Amino acid sequence: MSKAIICINSGSSSIKFGLFTLAEDGPRHAAGGKLEGIGTDPRLLIRDDEGNVLEQRHWENGAHLGHEELLRAIFAWSDNHLDEYDIVAAGHRVVHGGREFWQPLPIDAHVLAELESFCSLAPLHQPHNLAAIREIARHSPGMLQVACFDTAFHHAMPAVASAMALPRELSQRGFRRYGFHGLSYEYIARQLRHLDPELAQGKVIAAHLGNGASMCAMDGGRSVDTTMGFTALDGLMMGTRTGSLDPGVVIHLQLQEGLTAQQVETLLYKQSGLLGVSGISSDMRALHDSADPRAREAIDLFVWRAARHAAALMSALQGLDGMVFTAGIGENDPLIRKAICERLGWAGLLLDEEANQANAPVISAPHSRVKLRVIATDEERMIALHTHSVYQAQRSVA
Ligand code: ADP
Image 1 (tube, rainbow, N blue to C red):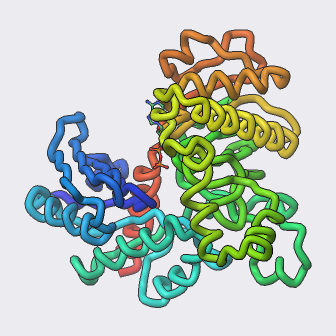
Image 2 (image 1 turned 90 degrees about the vertical axis):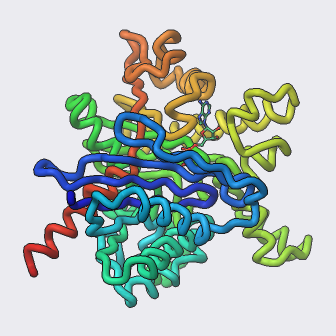
């Protein structure tokens, strides 16, 4: 039996997972899948490393099924189909590590209790991340489980980038900008070192444009600033989240309009962004397909704000050598990339139209001052690498 680790990236409406065997040269991808549409129309697709479909399932009328039940369905499938593997560890994306945690960490009861206390800081993700951990602990008690934090990549941001202009006493209690999508940015920085070592040394903005969206200013592969802050609500406009918002709106909604804190939370996390502005969908593809002018307005606002945040990160970097697009929209949507790059043309971004249309790895024109790239992110691989290191460290101690 070959030893393997399973990596779980449990999000608000989807669960991505990867199975990696432990080869001499590190974890090797063997199979992976995505369970999408949790809460609306759940469907599961699992493929092996060559892209062959291993499992495809659709739950008719499955809107009521929660993360736990659907995770159990994934484990039931793995029990029946993966018996040639000895699964020795499970790695998890955990969105918030708070003040204390940033290194990949074996999870015990104490760690789990601490992570629970950060749920209000990442309500769309943290409860689901922890649900997956608990479900595995039930299913395979004693198995090593490792938390890999989305905040980790930004841990060493300069103090001025992580500070908030609040009274000092609050900052000392951990009110600071943490930043998220760290596993994605760590993977992008790593890929860039292989693909384009010269650019990797330079000043680069990585734009993770998915359902959740953020940007990271990387100097020599290290995060020096990012658009998300204390929570994953800050920064760019997203599928259902507002991004940066005048905090006066929150005060007004509560004091003048009588909304409860929970209602405001739901409004800002789940009913705003592309969905709220368009009134149609949080999905960029659906907005492109719609003839409704509100869809156009939502896209225009998304682009306007993405370019505005990118310009702010250029100031943090004091220049720009390259920009990398990643995640669902960043990897697949030439129209959005084009619109953002056009708004940043003054800073030396010039697209090669054909390369952009083809989602090519390099999409800048040869004489563009700023190099433009598309890199597919792989958070599961990053989780696998960290989990493998923790597994090896534990074995060497034992
Ligand atoms: P998350 O992992 O945060 O759930 P993804 O990275 O999968 O999100 O990104 C989801 C977004 O990517 C959606 O808005 C979706 O419409 C968009 N997307 C995915 N594929 C394409 C595509 N081919 N063209 C345009 N947008 C796409």
